Amino acid sequence: MRHERHMMKQFAVFAALALGMAFFGTGTPTAKVVTSGFPLLLAPFLRLLLAAVLTTPLLVVFRAEVRRIGRRDWLLVVGIGSVGLVAFSLFLMTGMGMVNGVVGAMVMSTSPAAVALGAAWFLGDDLGPRKVAAVVLSVAGVVIINLAGESFQASGGWTLVLGALLVFGAVASSTAYSLFAKQASREVRPTLLIPLAAWVAVIVLAVPASVQAIRFDFATPSLEQWLALAWWGVGPFGIGTLLWFVGLKYVQASTASGFMGAMPASGLLVSYVWLGDRFYWIHLVGFGFIVAAIALVAWAHRRSETRDESAGREFRGCHAHPG
Image (cartoon, rainbow, N blue to C red):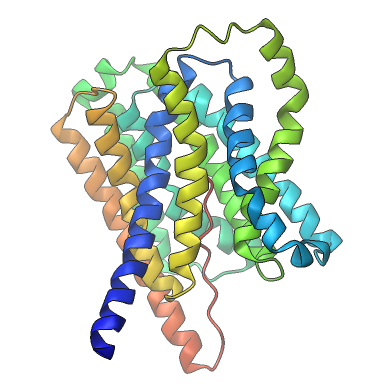
């Protein structure tokens, strides 16, 4: 009986990790639907306002911990909200207005390699040959998707390239989110970062979004676009982040990193089913490169973890993502 309970708990943890990443992945094609119906600044404001309101009960439950947050960690929270959420949303919305959902999902799936590079450059993490190879594979996968044959022509030629670069700006913003969150979570409960960062983003966007709201006809967006906006706030950022942190609490960082492959997979699936994007076999080639990159990052994490355990040190991963 005890073994069965352990197995059920392990299954629930793995399901939380997989679903958390799957929710993250749906954000890229969802942003494309939102972009077609809402102004650039108003959409992320409404999305993050919804997420902030829904996650505010966490601030009430852990209010004693909120009062103990120091100045340095507040600065990190401001960085998470302004760069990791505001800049992320603006880059993603602008870029997704130029590319299809498949290309956007592929570019966003370079996030694990980008985080590995950022951790090495700014936090002093070891960047071994496996992580370097992961970065090369990720870039190769994106190039194949963006520039090869029919996919390039069907997506708008050089407009696609500019759009992909803007989406990669979202990847850079999410990497900053990850690095800031890695630092802040040493003193602040990770789940508290969700509502705190969301409220920071809401405050940053409040004035420009209000200007757009005055001129915007709220009857213009379709029901589908309103539902997409609601899901973009509740699903990828709200539910996805909570599930990810719940699962991450019970497993090693190297184990959790293996579930990051669910992010591009769900983005592709939603793009094909919801957006009706055309499937090209070349997408499988690019996706294969990116999956290989994710596997290499997970392998590098595992080796680092094993090495630190052997030396009696605590291993710290870097697995925080915006939605």
